[in-house]
Length: 402
Image (cartoon, rainbow, N blue to C red):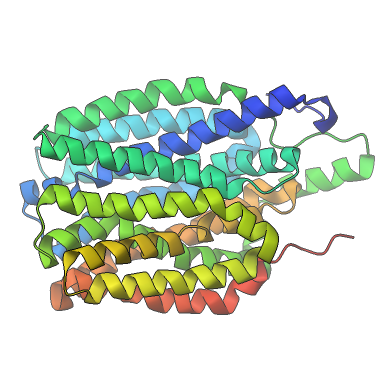
């Protein structure tokens, strides 16, 4: 895709790119949630303890962490459209490997999950770069709504997963169909992406753009970028812990049926989706710092309800509040990393890499603690990290314009 000047993009072109970006986010969430909805069945088939399951889930994070530091370079070289299309194929292959491989043992499952993580990691950076580009063309905040698209995809995937569990559809058939849907539909959907960085008629601006492109690894030395990464890590740990462990905790500690546990996971995702969709108004009115601090408090309250509730309906309310509170940390962090369009891909890559450390360390940490104090109590670690994030979130303020 060749670069196009910003002025040459018609409203129809920007609108098409917006729809394509929504599709990329939605499909990513749909693919992940279908896998996550079947975690309890995969665990039971392989007789995994909480600690063992945590280590298995580590394979997804490991794949993402291999891809993420490279993603900024890949997007610079091939652009966000080609990157998303290629990674959708990789993720489809990974899901297919999981669907068939888990029947034979842990090793094929780990290989499949690594591919899922690798595809998801680079896909994540590329679609966030495109989201920031569309946001600039529109001239208003829209990144949380793209992430609401991701969450909507997870809701659809989780509800589909709950239906598949209730109907006793085999994991293999379920995930193979999802893999084909993702691998075929996403490359077609993203054809309307626009150029990630626009050429300018100003020589100084073009020189600055080339400088931003030429030093992707140097972004790892920027204090603001690293602090944004830590804030994103805390919110990603909160989001990821809910994704991985809510259904397991409801089934094991609240003794709910498997389908009800999956519905608790869906409740978490529904709340996250709603706040991401409507939260842009809060951001425009109160700013990034105030909104994220308030949402961190909401997440902690919800988490405490989920952990200490004496009955299941109150735990569902806790899951809703937890999902609402965890909702905006990741998308706002991506917008903050992309404040400078010339360096957006490399900075988003750095921030996403740090954030995904939550998915690397989270599953085994929760699983290890779960073996000693139950998964439910282990989730209290999330509250500690959110407390750290509230102290650092002021670094997400947009830079002063000169």
